[in-house]
Image 1 (cartoon, helix red, strand yellow):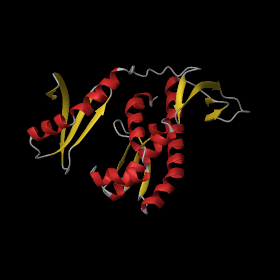
Image 2: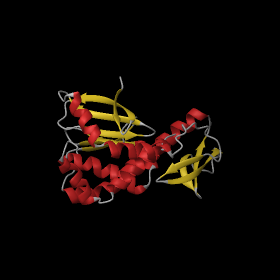
Image 3: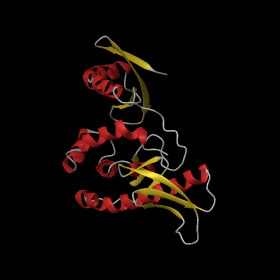
Image 4: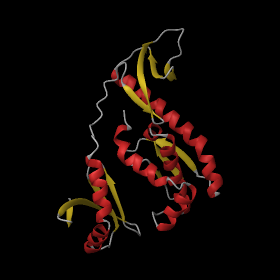
Length: 237
């Protein structure tokens, strides 16, 4: 059920998710989805007070999102379709498999090539997803070392998986889980996702100490966070 409050004569709707947490967090997803994650016993009036305090910030995001066309992605998996990989658009090329060629999915001459014996949309999509998962894991494993050195922390495990609403997460025992779609983002944005979860090994919440730690290592993290909010809907098959 959606709640609402008024700010500068505008009605702003939001959703509350209560959980066993210590702090309140406000997130905004395009085009106008506002989610408040709050401690279980936090009174509603306290939530409204905080939203009102952040009113200008909320309106700024909502107005920025109005200038962007958020069309849903409807893939046909045909030649020439555009796919993102590390922030760059590639043409999709679908080939018939020949013994002289290497099967699978790979990048060649500025294109993402899909080369299977029997091609249909389901096979192409599955093949591309497996390729993205492998590429995401390789990128994360290659980049995470710098943050292990900066934080003097090593994750228990690193897993790339399907995540509908998160780019990453950190479990209580320091396993890092990453959304395979993150490798579609520009490299600096992927690095922000990696750093964000690495910092959760140190701070399990989104407290001021957490964000200060993120900023101390990546001063431009807010730009990458914003980039993901604006472009995240494009990072999909």
